Length: 311
Ligand SMILES: CC(C)(COP(=O)(O)OP(=O)(O)OC[C@H]1O[C@@H](n2cnc3c(N)ncnc32)[C@H](O)[C@@H]1OP(=O)(O)O)[C@@H](O)C(=O)NCCC(=O)NCCS
Image: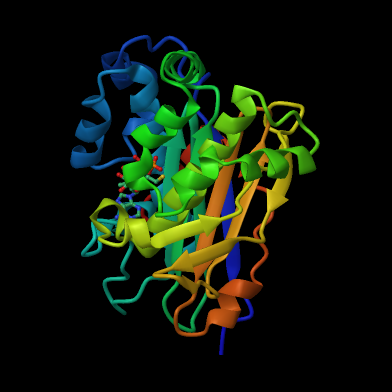
């Protein structure tokens, strides 16, 4: 039986305005010393290796979130939240005593936002979970330049190797425009097409990260999202917008019926996607509600950590 206390956890951390005096990655050693002190030496070194401070900040927040979710939801003292990787290199936490995973989680970072999704308290078997966050405007100038020069079709084709068999064709088809119009925003502009492009990207990344196989997956071409569309943008920054939960997904030509996938807009420019499944009892994962993400601050994480260092 699935535990009654199963929790689905979805948080976002904004990193753009954190540690404003850190203009170079090295500055974080001083400016973010309290947060860095919560990581082990290997993690700290990985954060400080980033060339751009913006990437280092997201990496720091990502490490903190992974430890936080284990400590907070599995009641593990902070210093015992030792993370490892599964055979596909997906970060996990395995309880050293029971050999089980009390919390299944995944993170994603893009354009200053770090997303965490997790399932805790599920005692009925394995949970596969993945997330992705995209920002449609981060490369807007570059995307528009490429599309102006090469055309939409070539832009899509440049990325076709990571899409499923039918997806590039769909992105170039008139049907995409019809889907867009149904959402009542002008579908023939380049930005609307780009929004559909990034929606597909977000869906695929969350799905492949759910499976854990990520880039190693030999079946990337055989995963197909059909008739996909982008959720309408939300008007204010940080505001959760439209969610799309009904997806036609094919794997090796067969309909996927065991994955719960929620693609949601966040503010005018971001989209998040969560994909989850419970292979042992598919109805459990399919029944979980994937609501809007909540925001969490680094301060809240640091305070929790410092209060539960060794318990
Ligand atoms: C590893 C991979 C999943 C990272 O994806 P990304 O978009 O570069 O980065 P994201 O910010 O979304 O995710 C990074 C996080 O993925 C997690 N991750 C690493 N390996 C993973 C795996 N095998 N499975 C799931 N998650 C993984 C890590 O926690 C990492 O964050 P961290 O280093 O701070 O811990 C990516 O390289 C990949 O394989 N992507 C899928 C391939 C693909 O086809 N993409 C195109 C889809 S359109």
